[in-house]
Length: 179
Length: 431
Image (cartoon, rainbow over all chains, first blue to last red; front, side, top):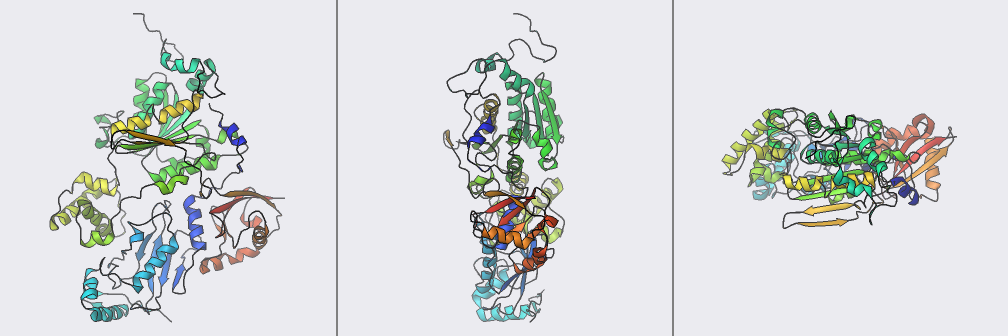
């Protein structure tokens, strides 16, 4: 058998035993403790010992979604950051890029995810959806059509949906921020 | 022709290893200085070396056959899968009668029947079921896997096992992989050369389509299948988890995807494409597997490392067979900021009375690490996190606790901070 150990001795490497903490776990610790969130975003951990599952509340302070408090669940797998975090909207909301099941159309959550991105980039990306909804990549097609064809109706639908009203037969959740 | 005589104890017949012995009887110009030609090395290869093969699929079957034929006699194999009929075109240790049986067990039986004197010990299950003590018994590990997650786990486990006090704890890892006509093989000397995690960002990202394309403007059969699995399954099946190995689940997806394809006049949704998309299957090619597993890569490296009979691969071999045959070998460098094998590590001897707040001060003041606002955690719990606010608050009571209440003697603490390239690991001792 090749004498590998002698190579190790020759190398000037600090040969210390490494911890059993998984790479995904360290990466999540690093991502979370280095989050730099504006006052409009807040994380909540149902179990503070579990860093892999938590919710994010976004309370936009400008734009047509101002006044709402939008909740997203984050689920991080052990294959992070090779795989992106799984993010879902927990409320039924009227938004062109969020469907009624809570799926979110944000490129960095799927096709454009890269391990160099982090949780901060995902959260900032989510907030951006509320500042600039994008009618070109719709998940809620009706909302998207309304937004591009009749902006005023769209804005009033947004306001109405946020109060928990029904639009075109769909009952939306009341998402008004409790102040 | 003279009659073959078989040695009763070893199962070897005269001249069995004539060809391989040519390499082991005399040193050559490229043999390692530590190479001892002759009986010693043959005895090690045939009677002492214990080798672990992970995966008994396309690569694994080839690897097992090659190892057995080059003279390794104590081989273990782990695989969590059972044999599917679609495996039979390239996994040559399996026959139609084996469909449904565990791959590890069938492969082991086949090799033992075919190659006298070889003992193959199968384990039908996950690599994660086994602990360090189990992996410690082997001299070498060869991976023929199809999953990034399993590779990350195996590589990290072997890196973590390296104990500076024990030379035997360093297990060379040979990792092979194929994707259609392309393949790669690499030799990882845990903690010495770059590990699997070091090269994680070289990987192609898994194919994913924008969710809005899937929802609104499907153009490809894959879009219809993703629509069924990503959007329709959770909507219709609720909390029921999609099991990609369950034919009923695949059948449901196939039906739903076909209906969607019909609606949008898209052709090409088939059962096997459905399975391929949801399981992220890349077509495997037997000849690529043979090259990567065989004497040009994985098993050749195992033989060279086990015998020191020639220079081994340093450390990354890639094969591109898509246009002609191209191969290239290079040294993939170790990354300083690799979360598994890189980063700083530090032995810290402290008083049993030192509090968490004091150890943080101590870290901040140390000139050699110059850390700002460190967050600390053990592998199982958080000690003190600087952010986000809720976790800072939840861990704040720990600041006044003694480190010795939270971390055992010889325990590990992972420190992260914006001022570190990645992380710092501490090993805590008490005086």
